[in-house]
Length: 116
Length: 114
Image 1 (cartoon, rainbow over the protein chains, first blue to last red):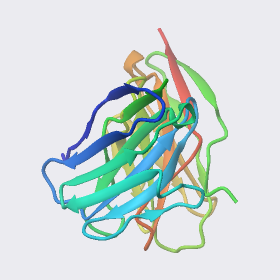
Image 2 (cartoon, rainbow over the protein chains, first blue to last red):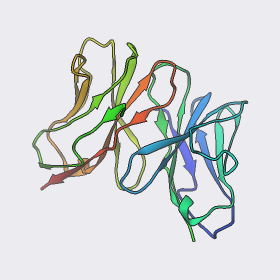
Image 3 (tube, chains in turn yellow, red):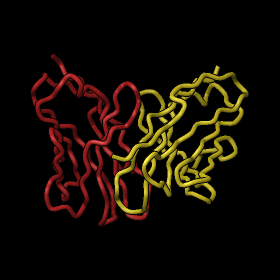
């Protein structure tokens, strides 16, 4: 089946630094990718929707200047957490879909971000 | 209103027994898809099963089956012959027509007891 690769799986950084997370679709072209955030023992909350070649659409309450999303190709989307702070510590997970409709989305393995 | 409701924060099941995880949903869209994902402690989201709103039969995938009751807006997951490796968080999710993203429930933590 389709595979989505997410890297890194875990990152620890100092407060004030920026962290980039990559999400790649390995065997299909992902016109749309989604970025989710998950706090411990909670559900996945959609942060933003990224479409190849256009600006990402952010959910209400998500700071677009803090969470920069780039979807420059059909196989790669990146999420950059800028000037990270301890409250940004969370599990970030991406998913990718090929087309609109009701096909299932494929998820990356997630990134655990810890900001010291 | 919550689009997906999972009322069981935690469930226990004896190994080799069957277990049902509840999920109800709320949508006015006549066309939608319902999904179940498994999230082990490692964090990845593993797709288990999909049910389309127009599907006439309940979906089945190996030991997983989806008890789809459209009038009640419920999409319960049934796991038969539970195994120790089934211990994980289970999320129900819905995708509406025209909305590419998934709405997730709060999850149910399943523990399989040897």
